[in-house]
Length: 142
Ligand code: AMP
Image (cartoon, rainbow, N blue to C red; front, side, top):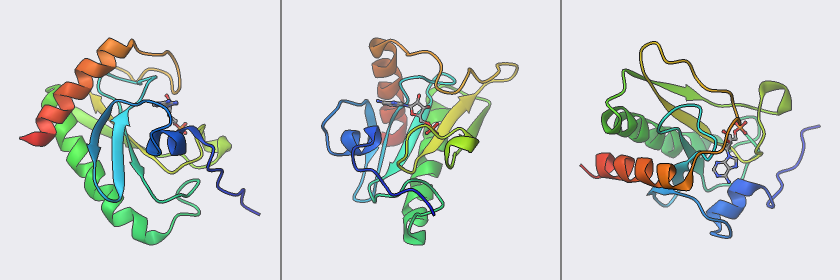
């Protein structure tokens, strides 16, 4: 049997505003914010507000709005960082590498010849995250 959704997970706390995040986008259904341990410059997480652990227990109605924002953010990060490409990743349950149990999609700008850094590796400096978030907000706004 699948594990239950835990409303105490860290992304639920971010969505409720209980802990800080560098938000770059928000609408009625979806929030996007900077990953604090980025696998590359501009690594952004796109998170539906509706509660589910991951893709396995999500309401299918979540995916339309979620992936609409994934596309918007992918286009924006490519522009903001003049990236060569964008990697989209999504993990489900511990065996896949999932570490936070609220559905989310990783959007990572990619540059020719630059490998991804390790998943959940090193914390980025808050000022770097803030600067990158500003660039993404600017690209989303134009
Ligand atoms: P996953 O393994 O797909 O569940 O990914 C969780 C992601 O959340 C990792 O890339 C972490 O670096 C990131 N992360 C963990 N805590 C925070 C936080 N407080 N704010 C932003 N990103 C976080």
